[in-house]
Image (cartoon, rainbow, N blue to C red):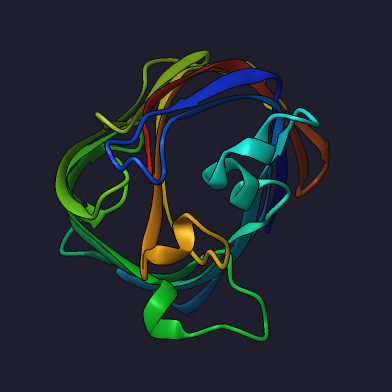
Length: 257
């Protein structure tokens, strides 16, 4: 079970549209909040085959400076609105022998600004599928290749990936699924881990607008892709309970409606 909160402090947002009714806008975002809860549990746990069920819930919101969003429809529609994601996933991991293994993961999410009163599954459903084949050469080294049909870059597409996990000695290691993420690990002790690296994050939300000019569109989708350089510290508090703090620099790669 993982519970997390993230805050992105002040930054500017600028939007350009070729549609004269929508127009262009610029605003100052006071803060961008994200909150998530994730839980995973084994349904089947055998030496060679594992089936893992997971659920997660997350939301994010944009808080603009007090006067920023009033004159621009898109920002007015985003102001203090919870962009929610409720997901269910099933992962299948199978070892063919002591070296070769495969992973299949399917995930469905309801992504958007829905409420309990207006949830239409077909309007908000997003699906992701991961396929991977790998080789575990030793307890300290595993690598593999795979594909994801997902939303890493905002729009659903097929993305390739190369997994590389290696522990070089008692202190140093690497954990990566390139190009989506890469982390270098330093074991300060058995109970304290330090990471540095980068992560690409993407999201896609379906939006509903009941005010002009956005109300003229039947379907509105907000696509976001961030590239984050990060430093992360993980600390064991007691037995199975851990705490982590993470900070760094975030750069928008793409942010479109």
